[in-house]
Length: 257
Ligand code: DAK
Image 1 (cartoon, rainbow, N blue to C red):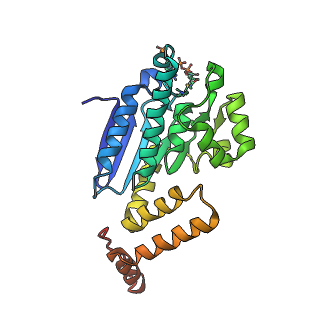
Image 2: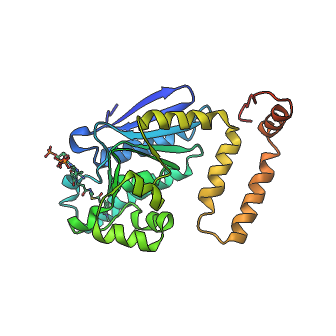
Image 3: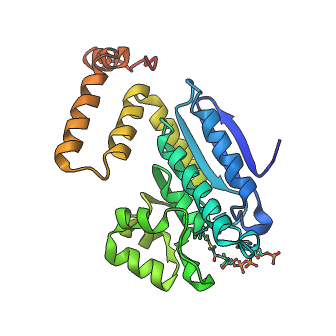
């Protein structure tokens, strides 16, 4: 089994660590294929409640692997970008939330990978950026598109055209990251995952779906989808348990049914 992604299970939470610290966890084909495969495996895991994604050493992920991209033919580059984009879509389709613990550099493909996560926690040493133009290329794993949606055109242009890095506080203020964490960002991500794991499992999955699947639709279509997913909650034991527990002034014991 490849060790480019380390896996640790803590009850209902899976912790994934991109593990190529000598190359600042740069994404080569092996990392992307392994991550994609793991996400596929996790999609069948009914006990899973949340995933945490982080990097070994001083980087989250410092981008796509420049050494393995250097000699790409345009069609190979298209396939490489395609596999990165597919991996991102698989992360979005995973029903449970993925929390990025950004412990250091999140550049290029690393920033794009963080933006494929549902919650992005930025540690004090986190640095985000899309420096591809410095290498004579543009973001290829969805960076331009996900940035526009997260931060708007003006800021997306600034980041993609200058290639400058932004620190955690600015990344939060821009909307790339959800929250700045002082102290151990991985522990904060695990705590966030544990908080999510205590909530109604079906509701968490449906809330992620309501947000992800309707980002690009009209308000009217999004509200319609939300109504249907809200109604679906009322077919679950979790809804009955959650409301009964509240009214009975006790903690809910959700079964994920
Ligand atoms: N790829 C490969 N190796 C990398 C790397 C990367 N992205 N980033 C760092 N490394 C390696 C360095 O080469 C160095 O290796 P050794 O020399 O020790 O063998 C080691 O990691 C440590 O890096 P440094 O010595 O440079 O460490 P520093 O602390 O001094 O600097 C840094 C850290 C993050 C500022 C610096 O390493 C850096 O600027 N790295 C490159 C960051 C970057 O440009 N990232 C974006 C990569 S481009 C597309 C598909 C995808 C993409 C684009 C198009 N299509 C096909 C359309 C995506 C592109 C990218 O992500």
